Image 1: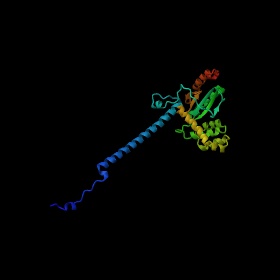
Image 2: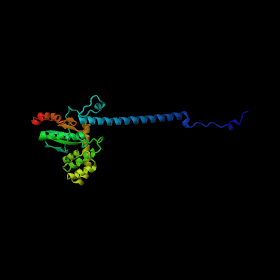
Image 3: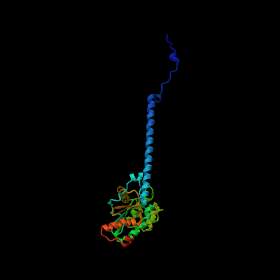
Image 4: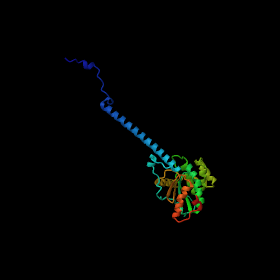
Length: 269
């Protein structure tokens, strides 16, 4: 006879929850694997992002000093401009020094907070003194914002000054005060130079000025420029704060091509 009290009095073993079942184990294992993949992917992305930023800064430093990176990952991934090619650089509306129709046009992509850009200023002055009306120097904005926090504001302010015909005076002021390029200082320089400060502040924040700077930066990227200063001498590229002799070599070659006499001071150098 069956014992009817056995099942009735015995406590039944509880059924395992879904998380304790084989299906639940597989489910949570899969979730864990997916989470690990996501974390690993993020780490790889962050590592590559930091490496890219480091590569860019190394290339900028190399370009500024005129150093060529050989057999390096940076040199293979960041080719930069081709020194054998003649590039077309937009100069319409950009600030310039020298005759409008000078036979030699030097387009300078530069950054007001760069020490190398400040350093090459003396060389550019020497070029103007030696070649006189044969040379025109054109300014192109390329603020390297990844390493120069005030470069963008300085570029915008210079264009605001350009709107009032005082770009080069403002240009000189900024390079003479590279350690003070905050917005308040920029406004102070505008006042010292006799600019209409109300108009200056309006232009400084205007979309037109921002588009102008952005256009220069976009052009620099399309040309393959990765650092400042970078020059184009009648379209021929020269990178870095190079000495007068390096500029003279390219300028003299262009003068010869155009059948224009080379100034004695340039030939002697």
